[in-house]
Length: 118
Image 1: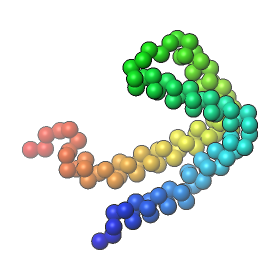
Image 2 (image 1 turned 90 degrees about the vertical axis):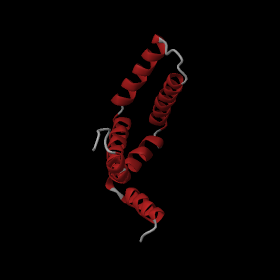
Image 3 (image 1 turned 45 degrees about the vertical axis):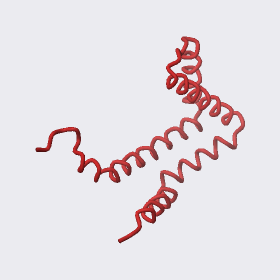
């Protein structure tokens, strides 16, 4: 019987070697090696995290903050390297979500999907 952690490390290795991860890594390096793109991307991430933090704490998000966030999002979407990075990130996230669905299937089958089974 294989050790469940060995299987997890095999899966990690498979993700690292996947086309999706390699493309994401390449796009990430392209952005990080371009100072203006990196600054824009960092601003985007900071803005996102700041808003998420405020939401989680139940704090009010001002109209001004919403506008600033919208402007930052528009700017990164218009930057070809950053928009490619975001597309690659989305592709890898789809793969990881699929994997998550597969590995949680035993729990789903055990507990059912919220419907009565008897």
